[in-house]
Amino acid sequence: MTRRTFAVGGLGSLCAMAGLAQSSGEASKSGEVWLALIDNQKYADSWSEASSYFRSRVPREQWVDMVKGVRAPLGSVKSRALKNATPTKSLPGAPDGEYTVLQYQTSYQNKANAMETLTLMNDSGKWRSAGYFIR
Image 1 (cartoon, rainbow, N blue to C red):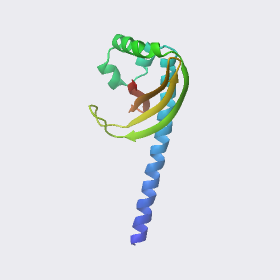
Image 2 (cartoon, rainbow, N blue to C red):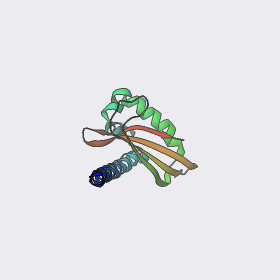
Image 3 (tube, rainbow, N blue to C red):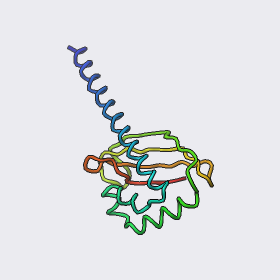
Image 4 (tube, rainbow, N blue to C red):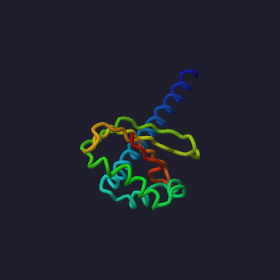
């Protein structure tokens, strides 16, 4: 009986891990689409495609000014590689929910080595941006 319980518990863990991997893959695809908006200087569109949580806290004009001021001087993207995709249910300063934090190693025309962090949240069944940082 103990073995069966363990086997069922182990199967449940495998199913949960598969679900996390699938949601991370979906989030990564959504992240790439969203980053393409930023890369193509479609900053207002990136705000429109962000999560409702993000849009409720950052006005469109403020977002456009902020991201343009930070991103435009870096120039075009030469390369971007996903280094980490971390699913989580909790983030500091944000409501509990379903999140995936993506970290990319990125090289820009005017900055050879940068780390982009894009936080996505499941917003009514769709992965949408909830935060974006470059360092």
